[in-house]
Length: 319
Image (cartoon, rainbow, N blue to C red):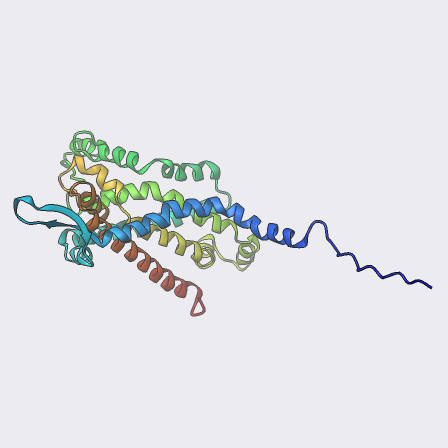
């Protein structure tokens, strides 16, 4: 009696392979995010790293005498030491602080006021008013500065014309301390609409039942605004306040645009103007890079500090 040898079992195959599907599933999000990561690295990470690298570089004279050569070399923290001892840079920070004291509270207060007015019941032309308030934000800052600059000039200002007819004398919008209010007015005109939209969106997300319960209890519209709406939109106020502070520290286009029409604004009136002057006029890229790094680190530290303090005041100790 013959026996037949048992054949080995055939390997089990799956189609399509599970491993290939897992790799495809894990790689899909990265493929979608790849363009954003690429552009983020090209236009943010790499420039920041290059600026930090330049901040430790500087020019030195090698050889001495009439045949000395100007070469770029590593200078350590010399550029940072020069930044912290530069009186014009520090004075620009002080002027920016004074400007922010005028501009930031005014922008936030008007944005909140307009948002509350638009959110009141029975308001008419709400869509038109919202668009009209937001529209100046679409105007570029340089154009807005030129527009207001002509309105500030004594020879073209309608305000000065009316003041002259009333024998009130010409008004000097570019004098001190009026200049801070003149610059803050440009930020006010263009920044209120953006912040108003953020606050108004937060107001529209509140359930109407909250207002109905308050009205049943006899609360007026003013009481609802002060005791319900403003506390509930506190996160939006924190966000807009943080944006306003960052925008204030990055002030550049308004004073740089108005500088040719007045002698009250120097080439280094604010830190960014000082950085531009050092980089492209004085050819001191290392010093400009160090000043940029100091400004960026200061903005980051101040933003984190304000965010922490405002969150703690808004949400309590658990924030």
